[in-house]
Image (cartoon, rainbow, N blue to C red; front, side):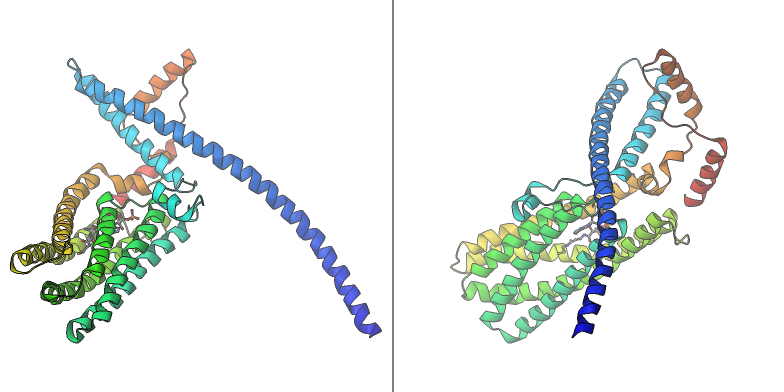
Length: 390
Ligand code: COA
């Protein structure tokens, strides 16, 4: 007994020494954390300030562009300034990637005032990957359930399927809001699409069984099987994009270049788009079938509402997807991806010398400083790097 007690006391003394060390380390951690949080706040307000002033300058530039007596020289200056503004916007975007962002109203309404920012780049990619996987898995389950329903015709299974639709789209809207807080560029329509789809699920859930319901049911189940197949295609495309963007961002896999990304993306889109349009025209056809039901059967309010909702979904999807191509062409013309991934601080501009001398002049008057000193060999090195990328 005495021996055991001695061991206990010795262990305790050892542990107490270790605790002292831990206490010191934790104190150091708290101090660093406080410093880090203070720095974070300063950076956030610095970025907000920069963005505000950029907005003001952009407005002024627009006024100059729209002015009557603009000389050739001034047009050149404006074009240079526009490039600078674009680059600075991208630089601020890069800074924001590692700074916390405020959640939107929808997210705060659901989760309360918690910070949903993911500051680690890897974790961000993983979250997006999990989001894509979540969509795929639920859609596969939905596809299997829809196929079973098509053949079995059980009301309870139908209701379970409708409930799955409501739950799935509700969850998607929350996950997407978190993605947006973390810098994702999901277009507003896709979020609206998911809110509307959630309402569609709710209306289907309360649509009472009857002749009209039975007439539409089979068509709807087949449509859902097709949606599951579409989701699989979208998953392959999005996963491919994510993998390539990740490699570009990390610059580890040098076999992937911006050119490589673009050619893969256009190929992927070319394959995906016809299937997407088939889905959209089926949505319009769903709307038309429901509309016809109003004249052939005695229907409840769910039928016109669903007809309208499917029409909104079809038209919205066709419009947004059709806009994707011109938008992407515009982005690649402006080199948006290049701005996202190159070492922006060292980017070489042909008008640099001219603008540097202007800022030096301003410097001498003491009102503004040039914030981008450049070393000759950096310029050469980056010029080479960009040539490789583009
Ligand atoms: N749902 C959620 N997020 C979407 C999305 C969608 N339908 N479409 C695009 N995004 C995301 C992208 O992943 C990307 O995210 P990131 O900024 O985190 O990298 C961002 O929005 C910008 O995407 P963008 O570059 O505009 O388009 P894309 O090349 O990624 O995808 C399409 C283009 C057309 C393939 C894609 O929008 C799509 O699959 N749309 C069809 C969806 C649909 O119709 N569903 C219903 C079927 S009935």
